[in-house]
Image (cartoon, rainbow, N blue to C red):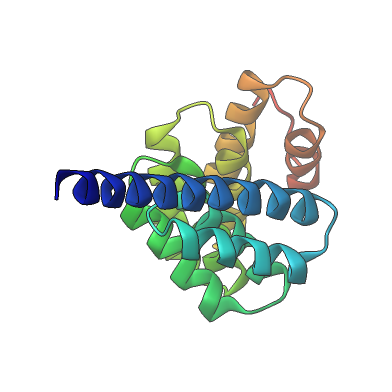
Length: 174
């Protein structure tokens, strides 16, 4: 009887280890396809990773971003929400969801998410950059410029922030 229980326990542990390893391999392969712009295959691989290990937040985040590229915004939103549920301290999840809100012209919600991303990581330049764009779209030009100046303080060579400031018609030392 003891041998049967031990064998069953070993089988459960091995199955779990194989599943975790497969989840990691699928996630890593998904990242490779994602980085190459092949979002359909990336989504399939991220989905496999999620199936194997549903409590791992990163596959949801990247699958959500892949869905954005495929313009499947409902699926992207569900994945970003799941990422935030699983990893509420992950600034990239709020940043990505903020970008989706911006795409949908929901700038107030975008600002909330960018604010959260910045609160979690005060040097998250992309969140400042895109929060500035959201402010600009809301005609809050002074707030936009302040964010772009913050980007330049963190990353003085950031060409995007400098270009946005120049386009706003004000110098960075104002």
